[in-house]
Length: 413
Image 1 (spheres, rainbow, N blue to C red):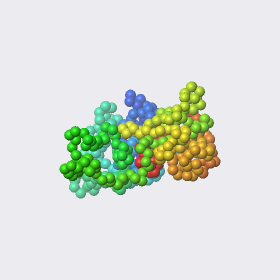
Image 2 (image 1 turned 120 degrees about the vertical axis):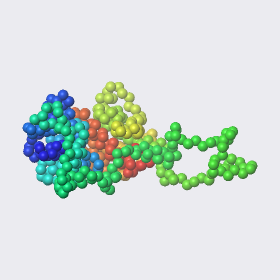
Image 3 (image 1 turned 135 degrees about the vertical axis):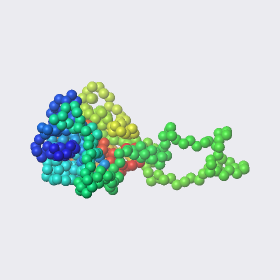
Image 4 (image 1 turned 60 degrees about the horizontal axis):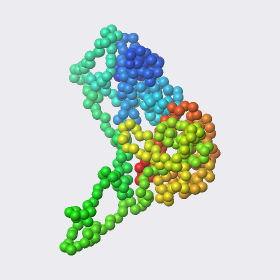
């Protein structure tokens, strides 16, 4: 084998129509990628063993991230699947997938259709990835090959090229600098609360009461002898949030259908959107559960995020005040226009221009004809595969959050 990095070895094996060996923690051979902890490349003379999550030299688009060995292996195993099937299965098995924009380029390189790729960052032998276990079949099985660095005489073009590559540093592009790893949801929420005059209780700045004994006057006041406290009141400044909605409550509202035949109702919406598992509303109702008037659900956040975002769910718009309609961000529809007869916007064209619309159906059903003309997203649930609900719920929250940031940034979405 010419090189010992996982990307080159995977390409050589793919072109030669050979498959690497998948082994688990005990060293036993397994068939499924999800059961393996390591990947072994063995050509009969040498063995190269890598952890399944070892990053390769293939960069993800214009970002600073690199595809792992398991991601590329999973792509080769599912190369004939459609994009939807490939992405759904990757989400179910918790395996990161290759970007849709990179998929064809990665397959062409691994299968030998192309010899180079602009997304590959080459490394020198001295910068070999930590954790790679390289063994020679002529040596003891437990002995690792020592790392060596060879230096040839000056003037050797290959050595000069290797030296130049080892000194290279990845430059940031206009696309990579915009891709951040931190979440600014907390900043947006705090900023909205400050602009709307609603600060957190534990961080609110309390102004001293001039009527209290010993209270110091404001630093900007110019008190005169005999002046009253009203004369020291600062002049009102312009309100920067004058054009924003007047509602003090910034919790977003989701409206679900009140019809008992709807897939999503007040009986099962919390278990679906918060618990990420669908339950038939009729079964929940038959158990004696009382339908709530209002629900408070928490959006399922990523593991590295600590901000909790809450939503209010209702199915009766009669309890909404006029200012509350500014907080409505999402409406689940059954495809029947009579559902909106008590809404602020009763025509579907006007309604779904103001809120994000969703329509739920089974995967083996066709949507209603009216849905095809409305500006709504279709969520297709499987009748029997409850483990697939998580991917659908994640898709729902991603689309709703993106819409809120673009259309109602003053809400804590």
